[in-house]
Length: 399
Image (cartoon, rainbow, N blue to C red; front, side):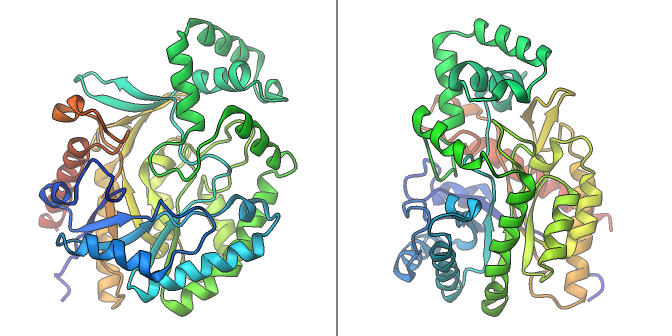
């Protein structure tokens, strides 16, 4: 038994029947499990057993399993602790129960205000001719200052940052300005909300009196409301870090570093209160020691996103190939393998942690397709999964 080293559970994010990447494509890529959500159900509404079973049967009829929910979205009223937030938390718990009754017991979610993950360029030309996702801080500031014209935006930036943003804005064509606007407010794949400029300005006002300390308290209130229930039904909740892990457009961030995690777990210590360990999101901040964060919270890692980024000293970054960039993938996967072996020897049922290759370059035949979800093309993720699988195999064989 001591020589048995469990492998990660290989999963793939699928956006449902309308996803241009089919379940048959995913099987050919080598994944065995699916990460999925019922995106057609509005935020705050209950996921019924019938809808869950309908989606589960589609997945299982293709010879795959539905292993992780990503995401069961948290309504804005819960984040701001306003309006009918108590009713919405009750609905959330009912959705959790319905998922558990259908055998789906790993739920990924985030607590990012208003926006989900954010990129300013979806088609950055990479050196090999593929397209990568990029976050450019001058583009974000240009949007904030000169397109959105957010009140008090000037107070968030230095004079030199404002001048750089102005020069950047003046260099853009109308199409480039439109693209940045759409990338920020209309939502990227997996985002649950999209906005017009007017509605976006209005919803930002909800956070005028909510700073990071208050948002942390609201998160803890939410967790204290659901984690006891999660434990009773055998559900593992795993919060995704902020992406990117720093304030955007004046919005607070509360899941960005080791200190944020420590606060959350001190307040709500049950192991069902866990994390989605995303190497890309956490890796954007140079001060985040990914190995140290994993070691500190390894017993709470219920789901893993593996990707790499290449960052500079100004907050800009782009999605690198999985074994390149600033993330030491060898080090991280070695730690994951050790944690899985520890769990196996301790007879934990969750010894094989579900992971998915996260984001991928648009390349090869995907460059010619008319419909491609940015970051979620087939071939870029296939390359990522193959590289991760090979790295894992080599590490295990070397033990």
